Image (cartoon, rainbow over all chains, first blue to last red; front, side, top):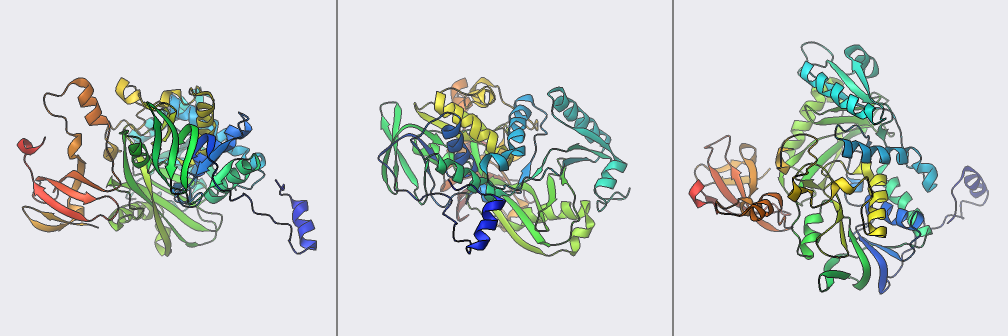
Length: 418
Length: 87
């Protein structure tokens, strides 16, 4: 792999930048791989990267039906944080957050991680009590969390409507200063380039259409580019987990829903942190290009459409404008939506399935992007060793049958009540 | 937004309706614990047509079964149901 560096750019300047090479190969699929990962998003590519780097495996393929990073990796709001109340969740996301802080160096690829602070707003006394409790739970596990007064919130984000007559009055907040945003595409491309340099075959335009079974085990996949044998197969297609697992005859605790996000025209810096409100479910940040990125609730009914409904968008916009009235002057330039795996407790599923040699990574609901490094790391461990890493053991598929759900929002076992 | 043809009120905007769950996720009264768990906690979640229970919450408040395609959003059938009609 050609290492990227400032020196290389300078040298390239002298010879017309002719030294650039494709960042990854475009190989033909082989007849057999030790591990086949279905899904070339950030999670799948990160899994392949850590399988090769940490576990020393060489014969790995990532199969992608479209182009890499074209699913939810390219359809999120790029927020990175680990401020969860439940221990299994904040442990997993914190492990990921630590990887995020070093990811550009690790991959020799600028993922533009920007730890500008991720702040939850509190709108009432009850909200502040919940935020304090969440912050305490995080600090007990060594994760940074600072409760903020009303004045501190106003100082950090001067454009918030802090008036007492505001539609959503602000009483304070909870900030995780190490949280922030990153560049979504660069995460997929950086992991792809890294994995490719270890010999991982990244095979695009290759849709899995079925599984090859030998008794109770999966021994390969049928694809639009022919049959590919596999020692172990890892599903990593969040959004479409239900569909792909269905090809293996599995029914998952997952319902696919659409989640929308949108971005305005670029403006000078006006939002300094990532502003989130869990009472409203609205999140606002400003991209490095200047656009105000925001999103809201999923469309609360099942859909694989990858396009959302204006009535849900309107709800998110109404919340955003109530919090930051100045946004009303901006023009919306783009909206998009992704298909999310809404799991039945709001937590992801990483681990084995009832089918031998078939593993599942999915159920990320609307929070998968921030987990990309941690998801890849733990899934790679699971695929390499056949048993879960301590961090993803609580996220086993069979937890639903044991009643051991990880219900962060406490809204019960219905995806559309989340 | 989808236009849902309520069996009682005629075509109405989707914003008047609330999605509840799929028809196959309603456990019959005599189901064993294992069956009930499977029915309540898993979904076939097809990338195609499924039968869904919706409620005309901001209209006549009646429940109905909507047969809808999950990619195109095409609604092929809406039929009225009562509690006794659920499986």
